[in-house]
Amino acid sequence: MAKVRLLQLGALAAVLTLWALVAAVGVVSATALPGPGSVAGALGDLLGSGVFWQAVGETLRGAVTGLLVAIAVGIPVGLVTGVYAAAEESSRLLVEILRSFPVIALLPVFLLVLGSTPGMKATVVFIACVFPVLLQAQYGAQAVTPAIHETADSYRIPRLLRFRRVILPGAVPSIMTGLRLAATTSVLVSIGVEVLTTLPGMGHMIMESQQGGSSARAYAYILSAGAIGYAITLLAQFAEHRLLRWRPPVHPGGE
Amino acid sequence: MPWKAILRQLWLPALVFVVLLTATAGSTSFYFPPLTEVLTTLWEELAHGGLVEDLLFSLRNILLGLALATVVGVGAGLVIGEIRTLRLATAPLLDFARATPTVGFVPVIILTLGIGSGPKVFLIFLGSVWPILLNTVSGVQAIGPAVHETARGYRIPWPLRLRRVILPGALPQILAGIRVALSIAVVLMVVSEIYGSPVGLGNFILQSGSSFHVAETWAGTILIGVLGYGLSVLLLLVEHRVLGWYHQRAPRVRSTRPVPAEHTDSTESAKSNGVVV
Image 1 (cartoon, chains in turn green, brown):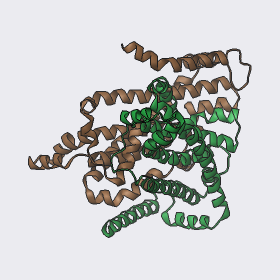
Image 2 (cartoon, helix red, strand yellow):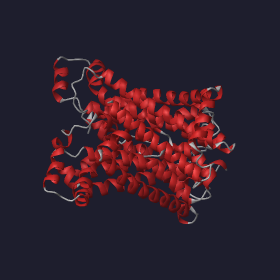
Image 3 (cartoon, each protein chain N blue to C red):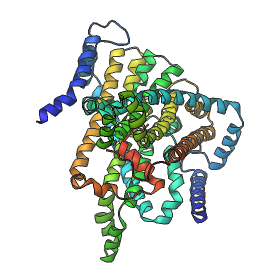
Image 4 (cartoon, one colour):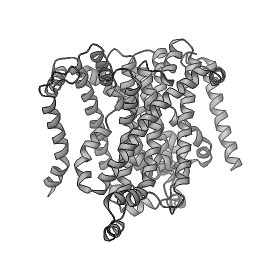
C-alpha cells in the first residue's frame, strides 16, 4: 500500500513538473495555461477569502436542491416502472429520448421562461439528475427476483408496504450507483449554468477571473471544483460500502 | 408479433406528442408558441435559412473532437491498462481529471484561444477523452488472466497481441465509453457555442433567444435534441454491428469477471450510461 502511495505521488510530481515545464517554455500563452506555482498561490489566497466559500455555497445550493428533487421524483418513478413491465415498455422510448437530450441546450429556453434565477439553476440540475436516478432505480427494481414477488404475494403484503420494505431495499445497491452519478452530475451542471449566465457561483467566478485577466485564479477555481467532484465521488463510494455491508459481495445486477 | 411490441412502446410518446400538439394549438402564450409553428420554423430555417450551416459546423466540431478523444483515449488507455505500475500510479490522477468540470475550461480556453472552431474541438476533446480513457483501462483489466497467459504461451508478439487480443477484448467497454463521451461532447458543443461563437447551433438558440424569437429558440433546441439522439442511435447501431459476437454470448461470461473495486466506478457509469455533463 505504501509503495502504491509512493507511485501515485511520483505520478503527481511528474504531471506537475510537466505542467511547469510547458508553462515555463511558453508553448501556450500564460493566460491560457498559467504555471502551477501561480495557480497554487491563487488557490491559497482563495481558500482564505469569503468570496470563494460564498461561491462554493451558491454552487452547492443549486446542485443539492436539484438533486433532492431528482431523488424524490426519480426513485418512485423508477421503482414503479421497474416493477410493472407495461409501464417500462410504454415509457422506454420517451425516457430514452429525454435522457439523451443535452440539458444545457435548454438554457436559452429556460432563460426566457424562468429568467436568470437560482430556481432556474436548480431546475436544470433536476432535469440532468433525474434520469440516472430513475434508470438505476428501474434496473434495481427489475433485479428483484420473481420468487421474492411471489412470496410477497402469498403473504398478501399491501402494495405500498411492498414497495417500501421489499422492492426499495432490493433496489438500493443499484440506486446508490445512480445517486453517485447524479451527485457528480449535479455539481457539473450547476457550474455549467453559472458559466453561461450571470448567476453567482463557482462557474461565474471562473468566468469573472478569466475576464479580469487572472487566469491563475480561474484555474484555482476549476481545480477546486474538481476537488469537490472528486470528494463527492469518494464520499458516495464510502456511503455505498457502509450502507451495503449487509449485502453479499455480488455484482449489482444491472440490465 | 413485433408490431404489437412496437405499439406498446410507441403509444405513450405518440400520446405526449398529440397532447403537446393540441395543448399548444391555439396558444397565444409568448413563451410557448404552437408546436406546429415551431416545427414549420424548424423546417423553414433548415430549408431556406442558415440553420444547415450551423448544424454542419456543430456536427463537424463534435465529430473531430470525439475522433481525437477516441484515438488519444484508447491509445493511452491501452498502455495504462497493460502496465500495472502505471495504472496504479495514475489512478487517482485520472479520477480527479474526470471529476474536474470541463465546462469550467470553456471561458479560459475561448477567451484566450479565440472563438473559432479549433478551441471548440479542443474543449470537446478535453471533456470526452476521460470516459474513453478510463473505460479502456478497465476494459483491458477485465480481460481474463487465462487469455493473457495463452497469448504469452504462444509467444504472440506484442503488436499482434495488442491488435488481435487486447483491443477486441476491451472493445465493449471502449464503445460504452465512447457513448458516454458522446453525450459530454454534445453538451460541450452547446456550451462552447453559447459562450462565444459566430455560428453553430448553440449560437443559433442563444441569438434567437436573446432577440425573443421564441419559435426559433424552440426549433433550435429540438434540433439539438434530435442531433444528440441521432448520434447516440448511430453509435448503438455501430456497436451492434461490431459487437455482435459479444452480445450473443451468454451473459454469464460477461458478469463473472471480477472488476476491481477501484474501477467499478467507470464500468458502472458506462453500463448505466447516465446523463453526463
